[in-house]
Image (cartoon, rainbow, N blue to C red):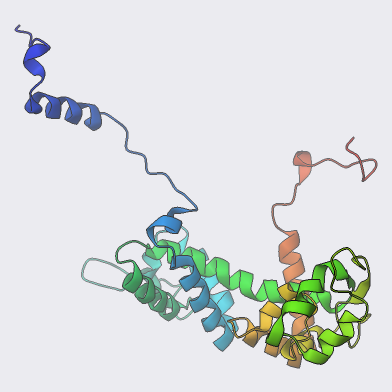
Length: 277
C-alpha cells in the first residue's frame, strides 16, 4: 500500500478532503437558545406580544384559545396543527379533538405575516404558537395581579419621580395631593406613606383600575397599564366589572402558585420559617 507523504498532501484538494472527512464524522447538534431572536429578528417577540394582546382585547376568549392551540400542537410542538389538508397531508385540524374546537389559527397567520415581512424565513411557526400562548397568559394575569394594589401603601421613595416628573401622564390634582407628604428632595421624607389607591384604600375592589383611567396610578409601573397600549382594554373591562376582576385575580393567584411548587421529597417542612432545618 502506498502512503501519501505530508508534503505531498498540502494541496487545496487534500485539505478539502480532510476537512470533509472530519466534518462528516462529527455529530450535528442544534442548540436551543432563549435569546436566538435577539440577534436574528430583534422585533419578533414584541411583534408577537402586540398582536396577541390586540387579539385578546378584542375577544377575551382568545387567550384561552391560543393556550389550547399550543397544548394540542405539543404532541410534537412542531406547528403541524396549522397545516391544511392536501393531497399528501391529512390535517390535524380535522382530528375529532380539534375540529370545530381548536381555534386561533387566524391570529397565528396574522402574526406570521407580520414577522415574515420583517425577517423572512427566520421565525418558525412553532415558536409563534408557543410565544403566543405564553403572552396570552401573561397579559391578562399581569393586569389582574396588579389589581392587588387596590389596597396597601407605598413609600414616597417609590413614587417621587412620578409625581414630580411625569408631566401629562399624571392627573395634576392627584400629583399635588401626593406632593404634600412627599418632598421633591431625595432623602427627605423617603419613608412617608401614601395609599396605593386613593378612593377606597382599605377595600379590595376595582377602584384601582378606575384610577388608572383618570391617570391617578400612584406608581409608574401601575399607570403604564393604561397609557395607550395593548392592556388598556383589560383595564377598561376591570373598571366596569368588579366581578370579572375578582374572578380573574383569584384565577391568576392560583396559576402563580402552581409555578413549579416543591412536592414530596423535593421540599422540606421547616421547623421555623426564618431558618433552614
